Image (cartoon, rainbow, N blue to C red; front, side):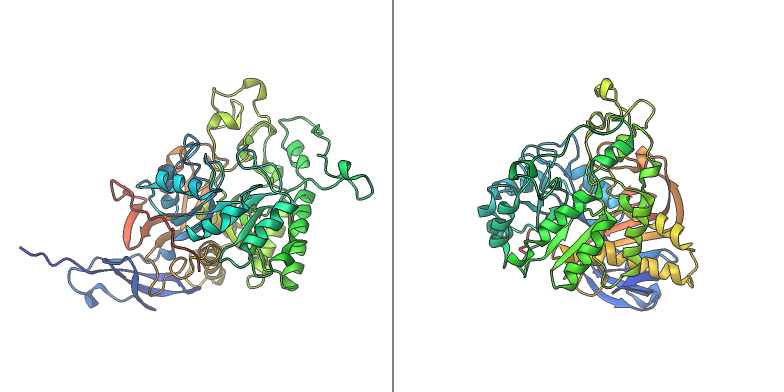
Length: 505
């Protein structure tokens, strides 16, 4: 006997961010294609649709586009004990993130060759709860692989100007970057840099001294955060950015991008370059906008990352750039840079949550020996909303103009612009006709405390544990299918995320 199965689903709310503006909305979704087929600027009642149509009015919760986290280390294959596609993408879905872009390093092999990408794709098959795209990497000697990687669908390329921390992903120098720019000058891609490098000591000494490392002895106790912060000053970032900008003329049409910008001193350099026509943007991270050096306790290496978490004054300057220059600012996106590891590599002392007895006790709390990286994929939206609420005094009133603007800013920074950064702006990052029905149902007034049970990434070691956050993701939809709800968990026994391998255009 034939059943009359519904062909559409409908979601509605008195508040939704559509094409960058907050409005009432009803969104109609094709259950065949997973695409949005109609959007109305009002809440249309269920009675207006066929009788068997799945319909939910989420008022007063906010319908946001699914977030696009354009900077995530999933580490598989090779370091799957640190993170993997299954756990990393589950954590993303918990937080309303429906697309993640995987970084090329910390996997073995890294995504620096076509063969490396194919191993990555093979490892990801059937394990992704959300859609996943891939970056390629630039290392010395792999310039000949880059055009082929573009053809295979990588979303951009990342390189380091300083030691990456893993042997299989060495830093590039000026000559390497010149070769890379020659290869990618006219390709549909983005060239991205971890912008830290040790500045030359002085311009007036011989070449050999200029290129040597700075004195290596840290000036203070190794468990003191101030010692670690002093070892990676903002001049590391400004020096690296100046070096990148000095080469930008070699590929004037190639978009350049600075990942995880932390130093406020770099903002004027980037603003000037953009004013002079250089195609360069930057991202910052949830942790640089929410954590401050003054609050890091000695030995709490959960806070170690590179570039480092800087002062409250520095944090205020990052926020000012985001808020004051919504149109022409240099910081276009906010991402997690989820960079996890096993707890023993964090070398946490016994009094810090996440402590693991497997580490070297003599190096406990040592900021120089601990792995650098913050675990936060899937926590970013509430982290950002918590600080926005504190800074702007947000309320849940529909008439609150600050709340309205803040919701629109979140979508710009974490959905629309991140999708554009990786060439997915034609079907991700907005709730409009023809786009994937990727939806985040956001309760902007709920408060909750981060516990191991709410950190779905593999290793429950994060500086956000124990923090009370404002804003909760109630549901996550991927291409028209409800995949997660806060009350019921995951709605399927198996993941249905896609690998995003179409070539950028």
